[in-house]
Image (tube, rainbow, N blue to C red; front, side, top):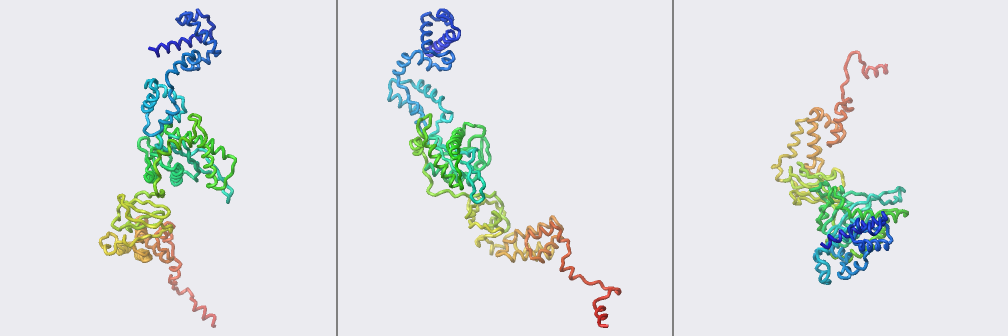
Length: 521
């Protein structure tokens, strides 16, 4: 009932303001229009005129502000009876893990037994929270989330060798509770640089959050599905290594990434803008300057809390972060699942690596980096090789070879030679040469089968002629035979064949002997 009468009173005060300040009515007219006594109308008019505010200015104020203005004595008395909660303290404490508004109210009531009721306490805090910046309204728990994205504005540096201006990408991450910002420049947004940026952010913070919230970047999220986003395999491995969860921002939900968008804006204004007139000649030099400006930004007091990001980080966020793993993460690339060829080798970046021959025809997964190639079958590692950068090279482990069990295999060198002989003798000879040139005959199976399959596209006669020409020029490989057929060179007579062509004998043709005899005469 008290709240209802107060709302009615506020409506009458606004109406008195309008009738007096806008329409210029007298006390009796205002009293009659507002259904109040002349003495009450007179009191209201006196207070309004003492404020020296216009009707528009008073209308812009909320209820509490109008009461403080017109009835300061009554307001102060009400405030002095009950202790006002410390809203900045409440906002800061709510960011800590496990802290709830109920707990904070109980602590408030413990210190202020005659304080506000729980409903009034909640009402006052929520009213305060609405005045906060939209980004600050989220009560992110300390150590819970790290938001990340790339800036649309890009830093630049000059290539000292060419003098060209190189545009880099600016990676930005921000912790949810403290708004502590990390920024670094990378060459591009590819998966390797994106993951390395995450690792640098973890190291900068000195720990790991519970989860990482990326925007739907192609380098981290393969499919930005609203309900079931597909995470890049290498990015998922990184998350597993650092024991963090990946929770992509939902597509079409801008509030999910409000925190990082504000961080990006701050980085553009406080980092990139500060460096706009400086020239850099390497990515490292650029990153040193970005780090310095990011430190200044993190030590700058925030308008809402009055504290710096650095202070909030040290106070509430850093203790809640998980420790970094003992070993750093090594980035691997993944090859799409593929079947093992009959030569029991798997192709990776134009080189070939062996697996146990018993896996011929099975589907395996391959992951590799700059040093090593690992092959898995049903999540179990079956082979590991030092990576080769020589195109077409076969890397074979002896223990992967069939040896005495070869007779049980479907494909053998003898069987392949017999199949090649059905196409033609030159084809069989070329196939024999390919297998003889390899350390292990199986390493030539792939090229041999490719040559034999050409007989499905071209006639066996043409394939055999192409193999004959390849043998003459010592080009014993699949690519050469295919090129000969594509260019039709198998149909052209060879120079050696022309030399061997027999001379035509005829009575009217005079040979060399005739001219030698004529010279002797």
